[in-house]
Length: 209
Image (cartoon, rainbow, N blue to C red; front, side, top):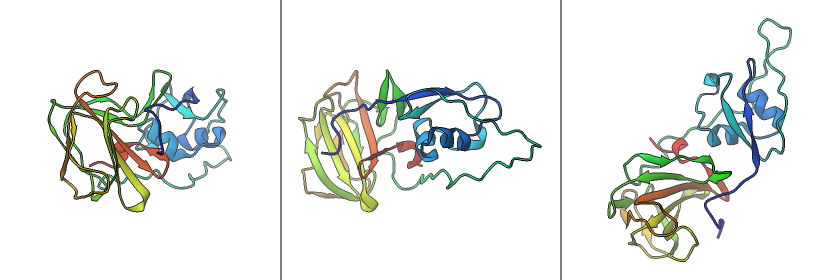
């Protein structure tokens, strides 16, 4: 199994100062700009503002970032790769308010999004795939289903009232695979939904319409 809990830690909060860009911040901390963007739900790097605090994964201490000064001889280098957003890769497994977003939470990291919905609401497969893990024994997650998709993507559906598919079954996008519940460590009825690519945790909101 490629994960063992909802949380993973390690990192610091960086307060953005005037002249700092997401590219410069990422370069200073030697982290991937995509990772910083997804953890902080930043879909447009030009919209970051001074005073905003962002989480830098893996960093041990706050570093000083050299600001970009307009009109200086120094030119702001282009980011090495844009922030990738694939909003149509997956569909919403259930509709409702997001109770808890992806990213830093309580000193750790929340590896998915929690979508509030009534107990028993149908949970649908976000894409065609295969049920590679169906269980009720993964600590904290309650009844859980993991689907494998093309390009080494996986989607995770947890705290289900009831799982409706079995390991090894193929499922179609939009097919009902479970019912919303509150099993495991859940404060109320909701779906805990994750997107992973290989062993890398991704922000689901970067892949949903």
